[in-house]
Image (cartoon, one colour):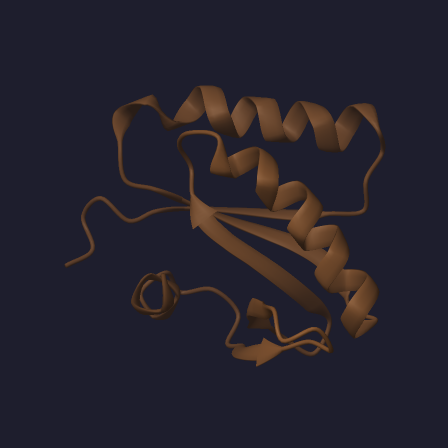
Length: 101
C-alpha cells in the first residue's frame, strides 16, 4: 500500500506508528488516513481504523480509497452511506489508480 500512497497525488503525509505499534497509513498535519483498496470487506474495516487512528493521534480521521477495479463504486457508496448516516467526521478521499504505473 505504501507505494500506492505515493502515486495518488494526495496531501503529502508520512507513515506513522501509534502507541500500540499499529501503523497510520498517512499522517498529515490535520488528518490520520487509513488507506485501502476500494473493494471487498476491507473497506468496512477502514472506517473503524480511521476512527481509531484519529483517537490515538488527535488528528481528524480520514480514509483514502484506491480504485483498481471496475466494481469499486458499490464499496465506495456503502462507506459514504455509513459516514453520512452516522454523521462521522471522516474525510473520504477517492483516487483512481488504474492508470498509474
